[in-house]
Length: 315
Image 1 (spheres, rainbow, N blue to C red):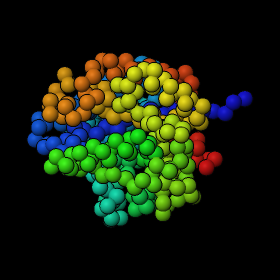
Image 2 (cartoon, rainbow, N blue to C red):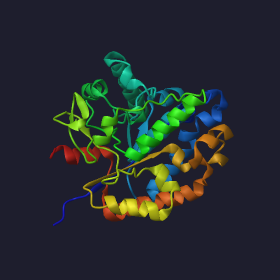
Image 3 (cartoon, rainbow, N blue to C red):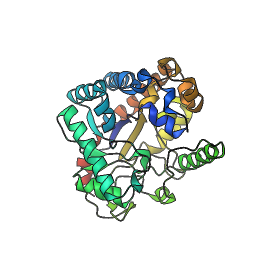
């Protein structure tokens, strides 16, 4: 009898102001409608996609959005009622959260948990760091909050190199990004579920909070994430998928913008920087539905909460 292989589908609900911060653009470009676009438009589209293949999912919500936008809080309440896990993506989605010190980090995570609890009636059991950036202080805070799992490690060499290049180019243009480049040690992090060393969370250890890295291919560590799955040639993504298909766990990570396009009311200045927004949202949703079906056919698709419960027993 073959071992159980699990997959999870998770969506980071980063609102558009955070993309302005990444690209060094003024947030004043966004009107009230654009600021709520992720929760108002992308969340229902993702719920429909998940329902179309009969798969559960995990939404990583930003506490600040739930506090400021009643529609976002109501959307998370509905998602939870529909069986979708709502986990924490921090309170303010501060890209420099790891640099703020233990007290500020603890306050941020506690505020996010309170906002999610108020919206859904349930405390989150999982956490994903803003910008995928993890360190000892932040890991310690996840332990103190009592999370079952974290899902922040993203050991993708091509992504890391591209991010460094873009940040350098923006700085040269006098438009510095608010994003933060993680330590290169992340590139050596395990690509499979593991217990971190609390002092060096990109290494194996005996930490209480299990880490569920986002899926990258073996060897070259090409990232299998929503933005690429929705926009790169299908053959490229199919080959990347085949390289990971025998893994014990497939952690498919997406963002709310992966189901949006320029026609949804996104400012052209942001569309020029975020090139995947030039691809039709209809086309992107069709591609993502195909990938969801691949996962459904080859794995048992579960929430990250349930995946963590499974792997915790053996790690």
